[in-house]
Amino acid sequence: MPITNPYHYRDPLTGTKGFYNRVSEMYLVTARIATEQPQSVSIIGGPRSGKTALINYLTEAFIREEYLTDSPSYVLVQLELGKSPPDCPKTFFLQISEALQQAGEAAIEPNTDGFDKAVKRLMKAKKKMVLFLDDFGTVTQNSRFALNFFSFLRSVANGSDVGYVTTSSLPLQELCHTEDIEDSPFFNIFTTVNLEPFSEEAARQLVQKPAEQVGQPFGEEVEWIWQLAGGFPQLLQLTAYTAFDHRNIKREKLAEQAYKNAEPYLEELWTGALPVEAQEVLMAVQAKKAIEPQLAYVAEDLESQGYLRQHDNGYVMGFELLEHFVAKRGSLWKRIFG
Image (cartoon, rainbow, N blue to C red; front, side, top):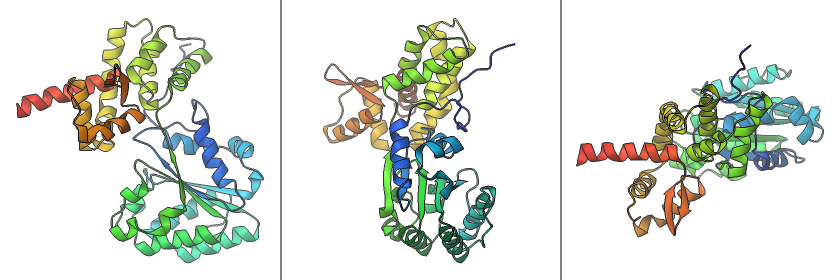
């Protein structure tokens, strides 16, 4: 019987299978929601950096039991807002009602009064509610969610046993549809947890363990995958998946096939996570040109995010798949603009 490829990159991980690392981030989140009155956390990470996988992991039953004191008193409600963006507050509260029923609780009226009554009912039963709101930016950017909606959520969190755990690709205040919401004190209730690229040790663990667990350990491919993908979980999974499916593949062929699979994701990173100034710095580094002094701080940020690394008193690309992508971008730019 053929062995199933143990790597996953097309969809977010569900449950605990295939989940590696993020231990410090997990402790930070659980420490905030495990207080006497649950606190709120904003998880921020680039596209496919593992935000949804972390939430899926945290809501698993045995994880709850391990990290949350008096776990049965917690009602964890998870909304996949990226998959099903609510078009108005009524839809948002309707989704909460459905999720509460899945957790064995009573349905609520889909409005602020209904939610407030549910919170009070749970507190009377000595229960705490934590809302896991994946892709919460779909709400903050929706013009049908007015300032009073966010003010209500803040007041509930401040006065009740309720906490929110949100995910977004950027800080929530940068994803608001109006300035008055951006300036709202709602965002002050959150502790920020940033999902950074994996360290080299953590990246190698993600590559090595799945193959070992199915009795097909990698050899020198581990080094190749690290050099190609850097510390980016999506690219590590994708490149390891490719290497596992093509055993004994030559390094050049692995790079070629991995890039073919990774190009849509790299495009998503380029357009969705990198501002124009960052793109300029990356193209300058790839072309071995000097970085403009006013963009030095951008280069430092890119280094901290894993896109660049220090080498011989300068910068080089953080990983080879990105280098190839930026090189192609630069060639296209030259062909169009001369």
